[in-house]
Image (cartoon, rainbow, N blue to C red; front, side, top):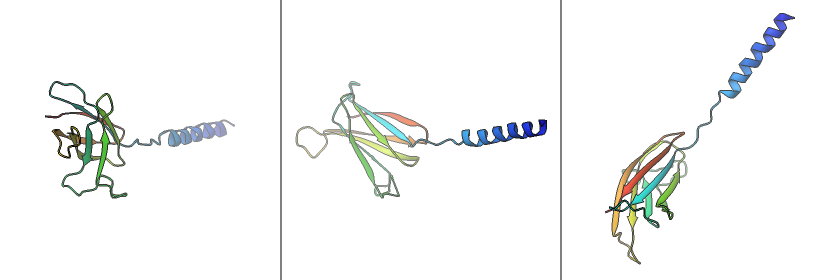
Length: 124
């Protein structure tokens, strides 16, 4: 009887360890904050994340070469990726209907699983 009880306890611990130790990783995320030279957060700034050299995929499965978001009222743009990588984030401020940015800046993003990379880009 004691052997059966010991076997059941050991078996329960083994199954518990196997099922509880399975850790699902969360995809890499990035928050890009855009500020001006006076450290004031800027809204409606175009933030493009891409791989260098240009033309490389940020998502090889979907063949996506870049991701574009605009900063919210707090100056933040949010990104979620499928794979860990080192990418470039470029912020561009357009004034009026201009197609040429009046101010811009860049920063590297080092993306890793289970991590949210937070960077601040100062545009000049």
